[in-house]
Image (cartoon, rainbow, N blue to C red; front, side, top):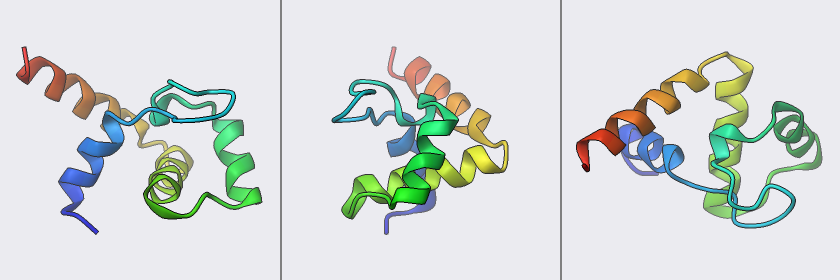
Length: 78
């Protein structure tokens, strides 16, 4: 897997590509939806890895870190 900082940057800017929450940033997905995916099983591949990371971040109350990364990288690109 990529450098951890790059993974977090990728997560900060990745949107859900399918389903009910298509177009929503992964970190902004409702907690109950992420918990449902955890119980059902995350998709295979990169998307599953990112959703699993979102689960862990939300579980530990760390989603603010991703919001800060998103804010910082958006401001730096202006």
